[in-house]
Amino acid sequence: MMQMITLNKLNINTCGQIEDLVCGGSLRRRLLDLGLVKNTKIKPVFKSPSR
Image (tube, rainbow, N blue to C red; front, side, top):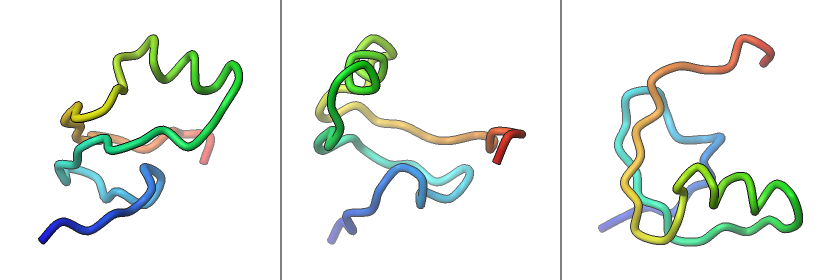
Protein backbone atom coordinates (compact mmCIF):
# COMPACT_ATOMS: atom_id res chain seq x y z
CA MET A 1 0.00 0.00 0.00
CA MET A 2 1.35 3.41 -0.97
CA GLN A 3 1.29 6.35 1.39
CA MET A 4 0.47 9.82 0.04
CA ILE A 5 2.74 12.58 1.38
CA THR A 6 3.93 15.95 0.12
CA LEU A 7 7.34 16.33 -1.50
CA ASN A 8 8.75 18.36 1.38
CA LYS A 9 8.08 15.40 3.72
CA LEU A 10 9.73 12.78 1.49
CA ASN A 11 12.86 11.58 3.28
CA ILE A 12 16.31 11.77 1.68
CA ASN A 13 17.15 8.68 -0.45
CA THR A 14 13.53 7.48 -0.38
CA CYS A 15 11.84 6.78 -3.72
CA GLY A 16 8.51 8.37 -4.51
CA GLN A 17 6.17 8.93 -7.42
CA ILE A 18 4.36 12.10 -8.46
CA GLU A 19 0.59 11.69 -8.30
CA ASP A 20 -0.55 15.32 -8.58
CA LEU A 21 0.79 18.87 -8.43
CA VAL A 22 -1.32 20.94 -6.07
CA CYS A 23 0.06 24.38 -6.85
CA GLY A 24 -0.47 27.03 -9.46
CA GLY A 25 1.06 29.84 -11.41
CA SER A 26 4.78 30.11 -11.97
CA LEU A 27 5.62 27.44 -9.37
CA ARG A 28 3.51 24.85 -11.21
CA ARG A 29 5.03 25.84 -14.54
CA ARG A 30 8.56 25.50 -13.11
CA LEU A 31 7.87 22.05 -11.64
CA LEU A 32 6.38 20.89 -14.94
CA ASP A 33 9.41 22.28 -16.80
CA LEU A 34 11.64 20.22 -14.48
CA GLY A 35 9.73 17.11 -15.53
CA LEU A 36 7.62 16.59 -12.41
CA VAL A 37 4.56 15.21 -14.15
CA LYS A 38 2.14 12.44 -13.11
CA ASN A 39 3.77 9.03 -12.57
CA THR A 40 7.32 10.43 -12.56
CA LYS A 41 9.53 8.55 -10.11
CA ILE A 42 11.68 10.78 -7.90
CA LYS A 43 14.33 10.34 -5.19
CA PRO A 44 15.61 13.35 -3.24
CA VAL A 45 19.37 13.15 -2.64
CA PHE A 46 20.00 16.30 -0.57
CA LYS A 47 18.19 19.17 1.16
CA SER A 48 18.51 22.78 0.15
CA PRO A 49 21.13 24.61 2.22
CA SER A 50 18.66 27.49 2.57
CA ARG A 51 16.33 25.37 4.73
